[in-house]
Length: 408
Image 1 (spheres, rainbow, N blue to C red):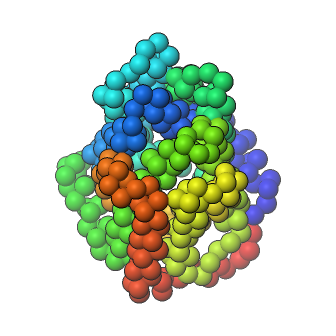
Image 2 (cartoon, one colour):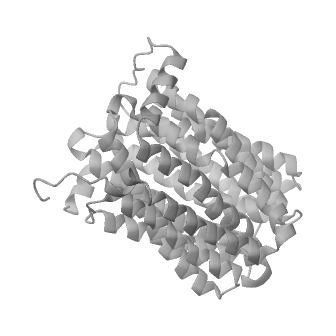
Image 3 (cartoon, helix red, strand yellow):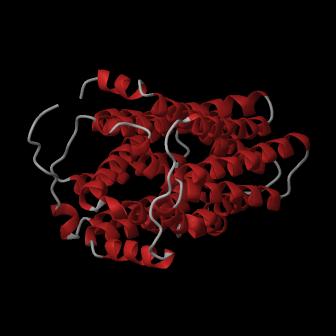
């Protein structure tokens, strides 16, 4: 793929505006989890961190399928603008609250839930709107740029949050995250395109049911979604609830944790660049194996390895995340009809996230009973076991990518 192609996509005004808005909000989204975690830990417990994380995920699970259908029924621009306005209000409000007072646990949870609700409606609409803001010939370039902007946000956001927390108050980082959503709102508003709703003649429940039938008819699809509903718990619950605790106790606090997350983001960037050229013949086989890399940062945290060792492990895990997401999305886009792809994608997200709030809420109490090291090591061992079980499914390991007919 030629590097000049990336520049060509940004030469189109609509996509440039979209890209600027989303890239800015991605940086803010990278800042918020670090800042909110350490704001909660100032006066709260490990379990409180899990409760806040779960509160942000529950609305995503509850409203994601509704958002997927609405993204096919009405103006995606209206859905995205409304979602970003909600998230901007919630994050700026929480940031000001942290700066001026000590928010109670319920305050953190309510505002996290509002952000999660906005995300549930925004994500399906974003998937559908990208082809509307870029010419068809440059669609792949636009999607690649969007993916890399998210990875860069994963580097800059946590690093900036770590610096802000080290020199000031975590409320500033949360407040700035809210302002980044304002940038996204302005960018979406300035895009010059005909925002026409799609046909909504079929009932909401009929469209929802059609998406489910398409989802369930493919064994490889629902098997991997079930796998990731469990694997996400085993990775993200111990990593992002217990990880900050380890950082605070023995690694140097917020700056160290921000560095670890920044390395994970750097790994995602590296993986994204690799996937521009790497096209495995068995994409789902490679995609399924890639989460194994998360074992390294998990074990590093469990045994309180030096920050640099955990960061390198997170870098490797980030590469795995990028490999999985690229191959998974590409396979779904290739195998599922475009007219129902958004709803099937919503079921994918729903299935992958449905148990994650429970995992976030339970990891603190489990750690209290078992201890930090057994909890994290147990999660790493189960991760390997579930990945291995998925590799026993023939449609996962046997699916092949199309043979390319020409080279770029």
